[in-house]
Length: 538
Image (cartoon, rainbow, N blue to C red):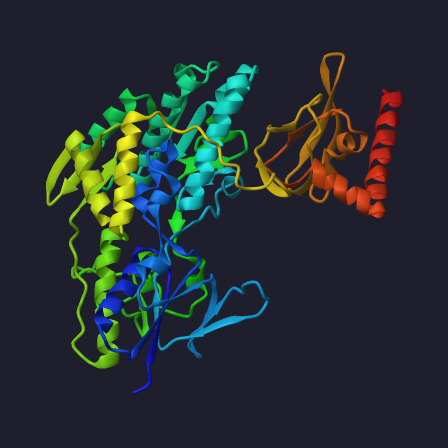
């Protein structure tokens, strides 16, 4: 009999544990070839990601190399771009050579996790910080430390307040844990800055519901609210985030919170690869599967975790949690092997063992086997259970050591500047928001995509409106070409999206492309001429 190839897409809880279960089922047999395709070569233990913010554990403590976890499976570190269901092929992104990477499968397991989806929310794709993966956690930690460094030397009280205001949208487990860890961290490290007072710090948690932590009982949710409130976290219930700019979080109803740090733990949606597949989907856009985790209407495609709408016996859907994904992996692996070798398939039905969430500072809430626990005992259980769920004793030892040292040593304040400088970027501005002010340093030029802006100058202490610009027009180039400060203020007349080009990139383009420089110089001269004519008329 020829070997059957099983290809698993996704290296999270669902994908990894499916591969491990199939490896265990293989024993000494060699009738199945196993391939795991993941865009990263490591597995992230996501429940511990919020602890990266405070530095209570190290960056490498929450990740495990997939190659060391897997025994017989081949690992392809690629991102899947498309699936050809007819030919039973995966098309993955190319590597160092621009050639197609095609993987044939006999059985396909779709275990793609959820992704951040800001579609339809003004300004959030440009300005909100998501919190879904390791890169998001590192970016947020670096951003927070940068905001503290700037606030410590900032003389403008308005900007200082904005830098020290941290807004988190989403009151589920993820949002609450991020708010708790971030609040503990910034208030603790404020002592290291002579120019900062912890009393100036504002951490705001926004939630659309009537209480935070809808996943647990009302009693535990109210306990969490009291603990967070006592530690200085402002909780805004029945409040929705409507839009975002680089300077504000705009709430439903028009209220604006001045902040340079907006974290959104909502919303999330299934991986966009699933949308392109001609497979049945539920209302939540996840793949419809039967109780055996086979995609409905197929014989050799399986889905689990965040990619699947897994039915319960009473007609509902199982939650997409790690504990469910791990157990779905065992059922899916058994059924795949049974489909290849022959045997009786199993159905998935798991009630869940409980739910736990950390509130930081040695406090947590937990519902375990129907018991409600809060405070230090819940925190101890949270850490013990998650420590034992980490893959590998070496990883557990590292995390236990980090937790021990965290009690004895102050938190780290190192800002890791892993990325380059900010390049061409898309920005969103709300009505009446100033893009820049007269007298500011010229650091970027802008091209309007949608919306309109007005250009105003101060004359004898009063504003003089000298121009209005719309889609396709640019502004801000004058200060860059003349190497001066801004000669006018640009304010949005309506909601505006624009491409912004930094000074260095603008200089490189205008220096190396003479026609572009002449075009901008001509535009600058025509505007100066129009302004001169307007002044003479006045």
